[in-house]
Image 1: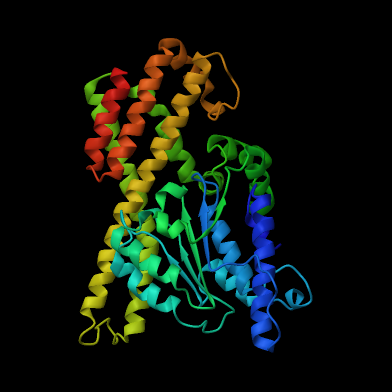
Image 2 (image 1 turned 60 degrees about the vertical axis):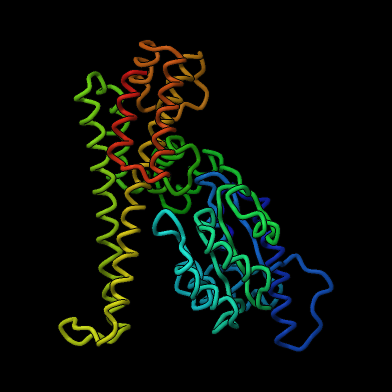
Length: 401
């Protein structure tokens, strides 16, 4: 299976990137052999991938990075770059390729200090691969200073450097940056396409795959996690029971605390998986002595890592909360559909009895107010309002709505 097989429901985008990867391969080959470069090329030094959550922006960018680094012999014989099994493809896909640098926000913003080394690296030649690739997963989180650092690098790129930026929409990226990028907009995959991917790639039973794809409305990553992680299914089931519990103030406050605690526990589990290995790897790289004692002058490096991990835990907690709020939005969207007499594309078919009960008990106007309350909570979290305060305000509005 090639790297393009992971792009769910993005056939048009795959065609564009395949053509660009072919031309990129021709450019590198011409430079290596002293031959003439192609007269025209679909390859460019900067790309901007946009699309709604779940469309697969980061996966698409990483697949393209793998295709650019592909060293399969078949590629040299006219095959499509991006075989998926050569060393270039494999290391790019798993994140260990020396010439593919990934930048992801670990807090609310990507700070300029997080970009300095990356920008410097973008001006160097590839160490082992065919291209020097910088993949920015959360370009919308670049603050003013870090965005200006990226702008300078994109304006004056090195000959063999490619920038791959990912963001929800064009408006989320500095105009001067997006004007220098080739733009590709991804669409939300169909429920059927996501279900088919889960069956083929993950070996999920068709009924489970269809339920996960329908519940997440085509969000590839969330559908995969829902289909493969029993704990994720349990958390979602608990969230969908929440609307029935909000009958008094005490119940609202308790439900809010439980949502925030669940998100914190989820973040803690993820942190335990990642932080320990990162810490040990850095200690080994710094030459820690037996027993973990660090060489003199390296304490600051460890402190930087601890600060980064702390920021990432905060972001992970907010991301986990956002998943719960997205599930709640979908739930009330289904209630609204039933109130308006529609059963088309009900996402939470497994909770249809609860949906119908709430649809009969309220009005479309009240349901819309509840959906607005959830949106207001998500906006508050984006503004760094304390999670418990934001969620408590939301649960009180859900009760009053």
